[in-house]
Image 1: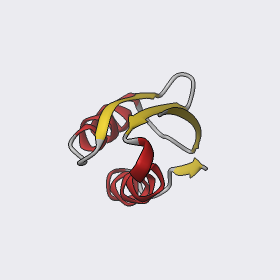
Image 2: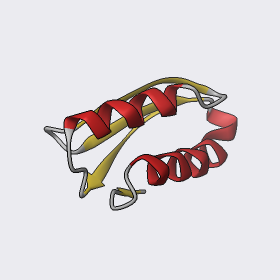
Image 3: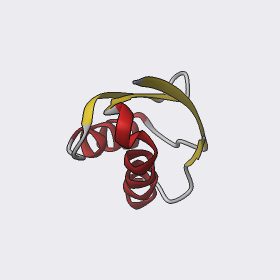
Image 4: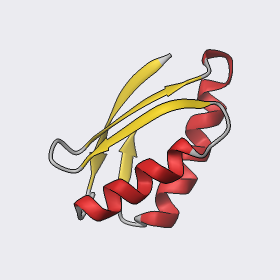
Length: 72
């Protein structure tokens, strides 16, 4: 399953790159892109565990960029 989410308050391209790398390391994630310019994140992950994986992604992103919010 591939879904795109809007990001609010993503501050810089460097943070976007860090978030993208951290998301790709999560078990079950097939691919991820985080775009600072469009303030969007695209995640491709296992269909059966997508909601569980998204919870991990939200936690991971908060560690990198505490002010950034993912619109689910």
